[in-house]
Length: 350
Ligand code: 1CP
Image 1 (cartoon, helix red, strand yellow):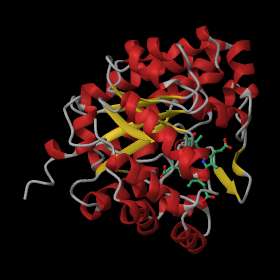
Image 2 (cartoon, rainbow, N blue to C red; image 1 turned 45 degrees about the vertical axis):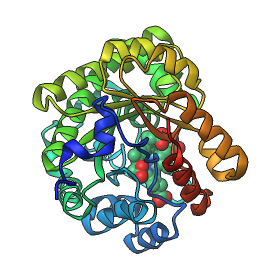
Image 3 (cartoon, rainbow, N blue to C red; image 1 turned 180 degrees about the vertical axis):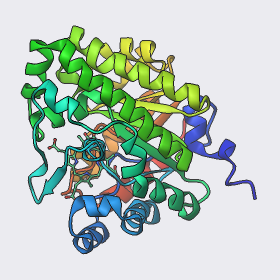
Image 4 (cartoon, rainbow, N blue to C red; image 1 turned 30 degrees about the vertical axis):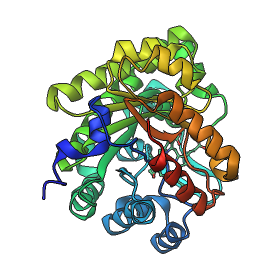
């Protein structure tokens, strides 16, 4: 049968602005701690990075949400911080604490990082996971690869951990912008290599997560969020002209329109705070949109989740559109609410 044919995959059709029989759906962080079967494999793997770097484990946890819910897309199980880890800035994931790195705060620290060529070598297990997934995934499921956007990855490399205000990276970017630019340039090159290797191994779409884009003022946003994304998109399209690229400039507000126009990405993932009506009027003519149910509505479930999911579908569902959350699934999400949400999206018709 031809169901394996890329031309027929619902998610790829939406990304190429073609008509679909129903709105495709997948959810950010669809694999993870809210699933008991994930927690079991995680305990077996030991550390979080052991999970990411062991293809048997990473393949299994990628497939878990597909088995349960039959999403239209599967996102490779990995993390945005495997890039600094590969570049020689080791990342530790401490239980209940999130990622911890030895912060880089000076130009010497950038110079001490390994050359970008190590990415393909060090992250071999990630690409092996991709090759396995292309065989094990159902024919109708699109495989999405990903990376963090340079600014967001830099906030962890400079701050040494997640922070509410990204103050350490901003301090450097404002005190010595040209020096900080060297870190961004290195991350642009590393991200292009990492995503290219994922595509060569079999991912069909890539998404770039700029979780902290919205904390930058406009002029810094243009330099450290928009411009690196444009460079990455241009390089990827030169190598893989048909590859759809999705961006997630979280919190960018009205700057999102300029970002979408300038980067010419195929799709934009909308965060929770973005108005679907504004997005329809200002963004949807530029490409496919994805989003943007509040992950906490998924925790609550019930009539309010249904009402707000239907409102998003009624506003954006004519397409091009992919249903998703406005940010990742949180660990306290009841798995049965995810099943309920998927039913709501599948049952909706233009
Ligand atoms: O088991 C655990 O304890 C680890 C929890 C976890 C998981 C499941 C982390 C640690 N990373 C992941 C996987 C992950 N991370 C995926 C693939 C799984 C999927 O989506 O199904 C993806 C796409 C990411 C992306 C990611 N990692 C982002 C960008 C998206 C976002 O959520 O904003 C960021 C900022 C990270 C860093 C990171 N990794 C893990 C945590 C807890 C964090 C956030 C740290 C912080 O700022 O507090």
